[in-house]
Image 1 (tube, rainbow, N blue to C red):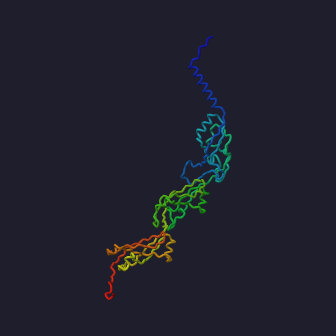
Image 2 (image 1 turned 120 degrees about the horizontal axis):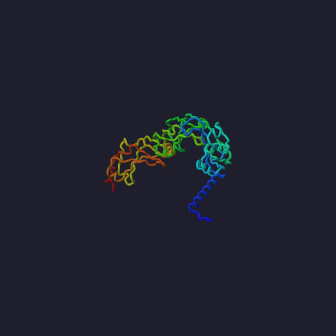
Image 3 (image 1 turned 90 degrees about the vertical axis):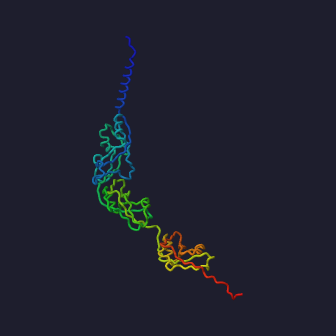
Amino acid sequence: MFFGRPNLRTVIVVTVLAALAWALAESQTLQTSTISVQVVLADRSEGDATRSEGLVVRAAPGQGWDGTAEVTIAGSAALIDELADRLVGRATLTVGPDFPSEPGTHEVDLREALRGSESFRDAGVTIESVSPARVEVQVGQLGAREFPVRVSVPEGVELLAAPTASPAVVRVVAPESVLNEIENGLAVEATLTDRELGPLVPGREEVVAGVRVAAPADVRGGWPVRVDPARVDIRVQLRSKAASLTVPTMPVQILLAPSELGRWTITVEPADQDLVDVVLTGPQEQLDRIGRGEVRPVAVVGLSFAELEAGVESARARIYGLPAGVRAEIARDEVRVRIERAAVEGPDPASP
């Protein structure tokens, strides 16, 4: 019997069908695979961030678990791939269905919990092992209370009065354990930063708007904590870093060049013989030296040769002898003077 050459189209069809049959068989072959997932611990709030009751959950601190689990599963390649695509590296365990809902600390068998979870329940695969095998979770009872706001400032910042927050009281929604710690002295704080205080003028009462309010991080400890309102306005008055001292009166002295001494008679107007209310500003220790009389600044009116010749009627006073870091502010430094040439006696006619 004679057989002709195979039709090319027939060969292609047969090859494709064989490849499909092989792929189908391969996809149904039982395989083992390990996938890494981030285990998300969830309550049953359905994303309601405004609630103030119910349960919240977290991984117990101190066990070194960051929520990652290595899950070894067995099943067909197709189902394993389908599961991996659906999980996208995350698996959710929910309070109640997947682990106990009573407030407190619970040890959870991850293999059993994941096996019954919605993420794996109908996946058609078998969870053979999970690493870590067991973890601890903490369930908290959510509550709400009102607390006063304590305002804190950076170290070294001095205030003229205690800062105040507006509103002065905020509502805190958190697990009861956190609320108890706050109530026992760990305050809700609004912290002013150097950046917020920088533009303020010392001595002036000002308002810093929109300062964030929060419970201390060591109190929150990974628990969800909501503060309402989340930001408050702070009324604050900075103390100037430099102290001040007011000298009621400071006598005025006239200063001339040595060559001009004896040639002029200088009279200061009676009303200007003292500078009045001279404000000295600087380090407190330097001002204390002035107050004790250890340092005696003086008010001086210096007259130049040109001013003497022109017979000026007033000149500005300056303060000399100030300690380092101290400056003077004079409300009125113009001093009125009367300049006259001194009488010069001629030679005695009787003298030889």
